[in-house]
Amino acid sequence: MGENGHSKVPRASAWNAGVLAGWTGTVSAPPARVTDELQQIILKKSYEWTQTFDAIALPVFITRMDGTIMRVNRAARDLVGGTFQEVLGRNIAVSEVEPWKTLADTVAAVRDSRTPCTAQIEDKGRFWDVTAAWYASTADAEDRVIIVMRDTTDFVRLSESVRRGEQLAALGELVGGVAHEVRNPIFGIGITIDTMQQLLPDNPEINELADVLRGWLGRLNRLMENLLAYGKTWTLSLTEGSLDKVLEVVVDGCRQIAAQSSVSVTADIEPELVMLMDTHRLGHAFENLVINAIQHSSMRQTVFVAARRESVDGREQLVCSVRDHGPGFNPAELPRIFEPFFTKRRGGTGLGLSIVQRVVDEHGGTINAGNAEDGGALVTVRFPVFAHD
Amino acid sequence: MLKVADRILIVDDEELIVLTMRRYFEGLGYHVDAAHELEEAQALLANRQYDLVICDLRLTGIGGVEGLQIVADIHQRCANTRVVLLSAFGTPEIERESYNRGADAFLHKPKSMMEIASVAMNLLEQR
Image 1: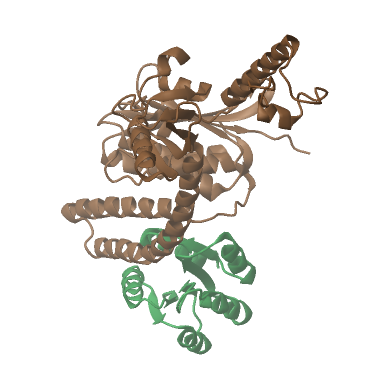
Image 2: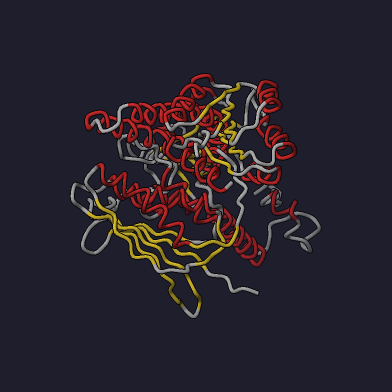
């Protein structure tokens, strides 16, 4: 209060904002009614400020220069854990782990440099960008640090996925080119084995070794075809075809491969499973599934391929399942098995199942992988049957 | 009556593939000639009647489709000659184009000699 009974402007901001509009004239000691009004306004503003502060989804901390937390918004409180009372007064170095370690370092950096600082935090798959600024406090003459954290996990994931996509495209182009060139040598080796066998017929040792060589060539060829299928942007050429015919060709081809590991393949395939398909790609996809099942089977086990027409909610579907009696999928890995390059098998590219998923998807179908009730892996593919005009 | 063995022309720019295929088909009792490039094949075709031509689609560097030229030539001039195209780079479009120009079979590499010979024999029998 001034000595002449005039007060100074009670709150400059309040005046400037015009919230006391109507209260004009000489500034003098406000009557009690006005003091109440001012308090109400301050309370209201404080409430608004708190609500606004809490509504900010980014965690905001205000600390002393020594790191003592003076204010937090709701997001920051949730990040620390506990009630507001429990959080206030603690040090920003809540624990030795992230993000607290970097936050404490950032406060120290602001204290020492008196300039705004930024930092990036990565912890257990989460990412944050941190900005820290300081201001001189008018309340207790002690400076404060304002820390704003931004969760950039989604952004980082997205840019990683874009970068990975670009890398895969470049890799695909390279690998596709190489795979094509490899076809000629594979062809050359194969026909040389055939011709040698023609020259030395009825020689059991040569025949056995020739089959071993063909087995290796087959593996090399499948590896290459998978790389080609993955690397290339395909234009799907859909024509009407029979899923049963495609599966029969696949099963016949795979029986020879299965025999080399003393595994048998049995099939229960309904006839006339007509659908729109890219015969080559679909055959390649099912070959991947059946060979996968063979490779996860032990000697004398059976791989079972079934296909039938089913009606679900009045809609026709073609359902094909491939099951083995091997160890089955590891439940922890199930969510990732369709990811490219995810493999636990020696000699695998990790592309097989991801190609299958892509091909099934291109045919408007769905694929499910899991374990059968009595053990072994079970992969089920469903295709819609579209009515003819 | 003595039947004269069928005559096959093998066209491939890879010498080792020509050598192997020639051995195999000779082993089956055919007469075999070979060419490594388009002009050489065309010269042989102009001089002699072949029962079957087995030709690689690509006889030069990247992007070549010389095999299509050979197919078209044969289709126009030698109605009795069957043509099998082989390719490591075949797309559905090229395969369609090959049949349009008169190819009797289009095989994607790799294939075994037994598969190639079986296609070849079927074509020769159909004549």
